[in-house]
Amino acid sequence: MLEGRYPALYTRLYPELAPQVLPGDMELISQPVDFVGINYYTRGVVSYDQERLVRNHPPGDVEPDVILADEPISMLDVSIRLGILNLMMDLKDQHDIAFMYITHDIATARYFAERTAVMYVGHMVEWGNSDAVTQNPRHPYTQLLLAAVPQPGAKKGRDMSQYQHKADIPMWQPESTGCPFAQRCPHARPECSSRLPEVTRIAKDHFVRCYLYE
Image (tube, rainbow, N blue to C red; front, side, top):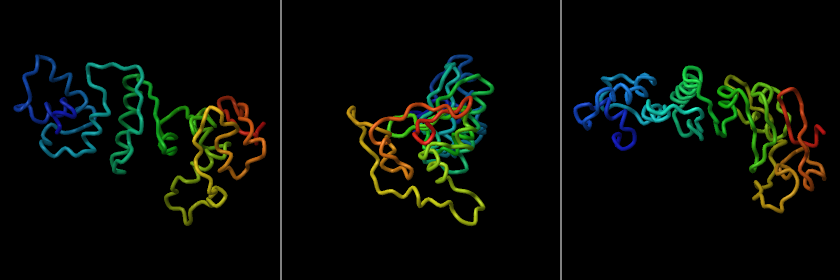
């Protein structure tokens, strides 16, 4: 029920059923509803995705410096995904809020984030300026992620054959050694399984852990 999930939305859409609010509180709790553009008169027809938009906006009495956004657009209709990303962009620009955006969708990370870190099995394998990481990917895992992004209008998909290794994603243990991507990497060398590569600086704000660039 809306009143349990997000009181601000419930109070705004059903004011006669809402509990007594103190003077000035209505403006405060209505800020998320106004910010995402839900019409006051859209009574009883708020979709789950619209409600998700409101719940992604911090309440008016909270002024965070940083928001941890863990998969905020997963399992949403395509039509609402861009709306939530734009909402988060507005929160950054208009309220000076920083975001740590966690996602499996590197295409949206490229759209939203100024800096991107690519992780595999708990290890940062490539990081830096988002444009540098996504337009000039160096680590084979980053290349795999970008190769898997659908290309609208493309006559045929990208060649993924070099990444079709049968190895399972490793269960990393304290005694594990080497690069965690070694068993699935098409460019793996013997040293990849014995020692974790050092950090290599590719550009001013672009770093990678891979023996290909040492």
